[in-house]
Length: 126
Image (cartoon, rainbow, N blue to C red):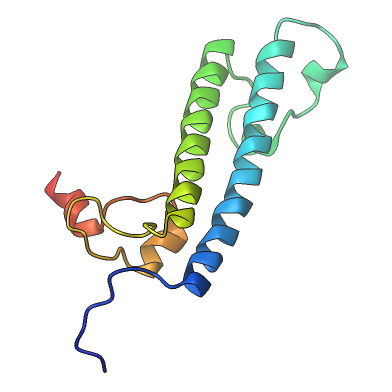
């Protein structure tokens, strides 16, 4: 085993993370557009009012206020921006490096939270 600590992920590893991020980004954008459509159509009384607008609502409350949809849309947009920033870090080859410790964030964490910029240790210290 090499005694030198790895300082960045290699191109193959970065490609794996990029694929994960692109998939999450596509889903996040789709969900955001559905939220926006819900907000836009919430004041109309057409047939769209009676059909489930998107998966998120099917499992939870059947009606959300325009304000709640707006908050969800804002959160979704913020998530999209975080994912886009992660793609930039991949291009710069700085992806997966903790901004506090400078050490690599474990792959397991990045697979779950691909836009993470802090290791668990650094996050606990906050």
